[in-house]
Image 1 (cartoon, rainbow, N blue to C red):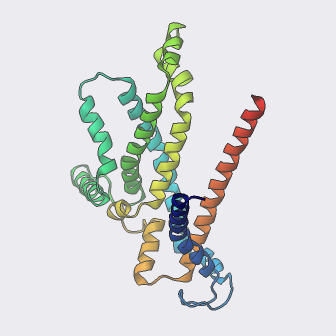
Image 2: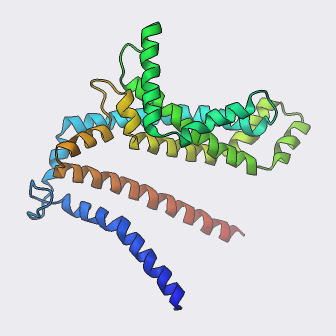
Image 3: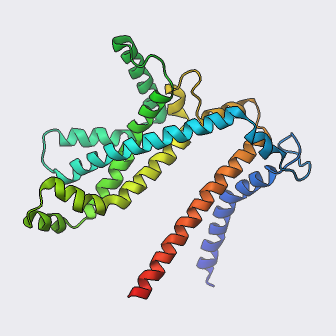
Length: 271
């Protein structure tokens, strides 16, 4: 192995260790019997039992999953429509302004986005009486607002690389624009839409700042509950919760990798 390869390999190992050793330590201490998070008191699963007995965390988890699923679905629909409009319709009045507004949530600080949405909901409440109070609905609308921008970018990039001759051939054969959209365009960009949905779902689950601005009394998402506990001192049940989340994400990643590997193997066999 050359000196340059050794140097690159060493830095790669350092980078992976920097990222994953704290995660492994967290997983190990989730089985700690001690109530003090930094002191090892023996192996135990007591904190997993206490985690599932904690109604506050369970309710926050269910609320976060509900908000993430709804916001990801609507963000995918609206983001796909926006991506198609920007990619397929090159000439329409206000296209530059529309593209700028679409990309603004990608570069806007979350604090600014959360504060502007809070002022927007307060103004609406004073003008038309809706929303009557901030809660799950306002958090969902806020997550749709910034998530659809990510979906639009993903869909737009997929449409840019799509062979336009396919839709042109369909129209030459007598297909109408809506038929081309549903029979040709949407099946081609379906992987991008799925990727956008998963990204929106993840962003919604992970969001703390925007949710804190747009949430009200009795509507606390899982990141908000975890952050409030951290301010008072981390308890071992948070380690157990983090370990479960890491396990679910890891299973999903390995499953996706296995499916992709099998698809590549089947493709080689067919060829």
